[in-house]
Image (tube, rainbow, N blue to C red; front, side, top):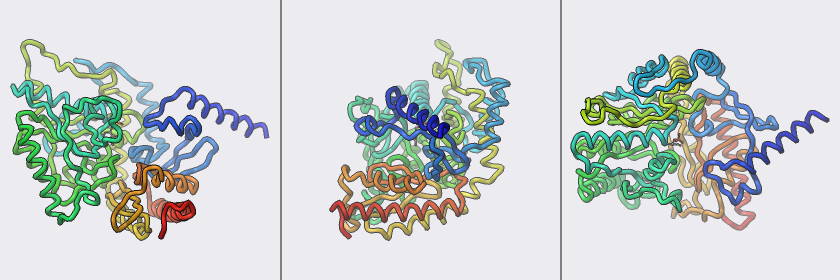
Length: 468
Ligand code: PLP
């Protein structure tokens, strides 16, 4: 049939063009030269479709971001209207737009405490870079020019620009980039499953907090600007910190005059059942909060760095020698992006996505948790719509599979064949679906995960890589 031949030829072309010309984020060049990429063509709700029209459950919401689901028509209308009215004008110095101002008001409203001021960018990395630049600028103005160092954690993910990548603590990603590590001190991750050791949970938290305080004293509080923390660490392995870890690390920051930055790029806008997690889930009031991803549900690039009244007061004070705060991007406060952000937040609130996730999150956790009955599942962890499975060779000793076994990828490939997309990260699979996920989608996801794990176990046994 002519039509399908034509369609096939086109598909082949895109696949080839992509392979010839595109460098993908996190490309595995060795595999890419053979396999190329899947070309995705359409999304609706929590489904995504490839060029052949095959439907998959999108178990990862694009990349933890399509919170209100794919193909939302209200967003499409908003985009059409705003781009006809005013898609873009510069926002430098004295220019603004209604969406830019109104979204500022809305973000201040949903953000905790004194986080009443926003600096816009186009994503999470840029938001974190902005946080660092503002912190450095702030301490310089306060006459504390030595306060420059950044505290981060092993396995933290804060982005991929030069600076955000340096704050990222996933050391396997650092290779050959010569990042400015001298700015950063990495603390132990609050990774209970791997780092608790023989300690009780209380002792483990004490250990983490003591280690942080010792590091602060050793580096010197006068040399430290800020501490970065994701409320739940995402790309590093969906690591939920134990007990009052966040409250105690926050208290240390207050004690030593260190700015506390909550990287809420994944955890805000409903993924954990709250608009903002640091305050409303972990009872911590940050000095800065960084948003991206769910702020626009991925419909358009948008990021925001929120800063407190206290920081704003200092950086906005008139200066005689040079009156400019010389930081800004062409697309800071992009009118169309801000209007989409506003509509997205309106939909999240109006349709009570937080209520929905609060209701179904515990069910999702419980059902996924049952998969720990399998011999290769070491731990199922996470919260609400941010979950992960960690696979192990040996459950007793927690010994990992060798990297070349590619355990996460194996399960991923089976799941994909069965119509579910999950994210493989080393020995893990991550699940972070659109917040439209209902009981049916959760049940389908669990069933496919079950089948995929069983098929993987069968493969492993056949290949002599694992035994019951
Ligand atoms: N911070 C966190 C916690 C993230 O998960 C990510 C991206 O996954 C980023 C920052 C970087 O955001 P972007 O990729 O939009 O620059």
